[in-house]
Amino acid sequence: KKKMNKKINLIIGSGVLGAYLSLGFLKNNEKVIVTSRSIKKKYKNYQFLKIQKKVKFEKLNSNNKSEIIKILKKYNPDKVFYFSGQSSLTKSYKLKKTTLSSHYTGTKNFLDVLREKKLKLKFFKANSGYIFKPKKGVITLNSKFSTNKNPYITAQKKSFKIIKKYRKFKLNLFNLIFMQIESPLRQKDFFIKKVCIGAKNKKKIKVGNINNYRDYSWITEIIKYIILASKEKPRDFIISAGKKLSGKEILEFAYKMNNLNYKKYYLIDNKFIRKNEDKILIGSSKNSKYLKNKYNFKFKIFGKRLIEEMYNSL
Image (cartoon, rainbow, N blue to C red; front, top):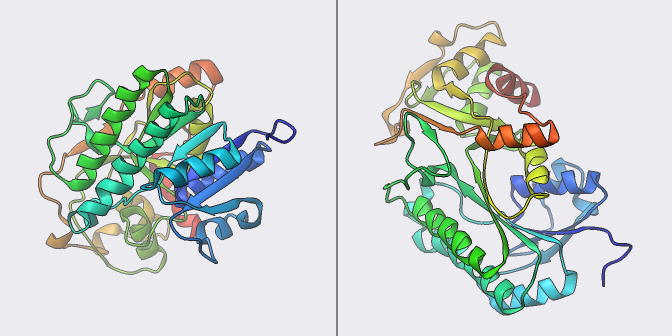
């Protein structure tokens, strides 16, 4: 039974996105339950945000339907956020099976349970902008699907399609499509963090193609956006600042913060160059405009300011 009508959010996966979203809900005085495949002693992301004691952790294997039924019965959540899954494009070649089951099979199991039990809760699946083929560098919700055979992209494509398909059964389902999300909790080998660490320590770094443009957003703004999107009727959202930033600009901005000329501090290393990459890949800002008109929300942290945030967080 729900206590005092406090909203209950169930977050599947204990990654960075889930941790920051938990913080967002706690600030709104909502209850948060986070599941992970194994119960750990330390949830680093939650410790970093100083919320480990405010969140309830539960063990859940999304490939097991009876475990899903049990947890939904126990907490009766208003919203479920499926933010779990193997998230590295490179590692997905070695982890094909895990990648598919963690994204697609887990999602399908949840949807089947919602359908069987006629549950009206809202269900959100995190997805990647890489599932679409950009046109002139931009992806929209009407873009054609990418033909890339990468196992991560394939698994996410299947997840996206099944959410759309199951919506026909009057289920409250959302696809949340993200581009690059940056935060202080980013792993050290991700481009922006790696560059900022190099700049701060006056070290030379090895990089791949620096002439590609990507769409980077900052985690706290992404969370505000998710919370607003979760008030809407079931639909798909592309959630990003919709601004382009090149590798070269990132190097320049970061090293400039330490009064250094970036040109002396990087080497191109072929092992970091991905084949068949799109030169420009940014998300359409159509969804953002919609939320701006309705809730007066707009992205403020992108470009140079995003690099400053990362640099200052180190």
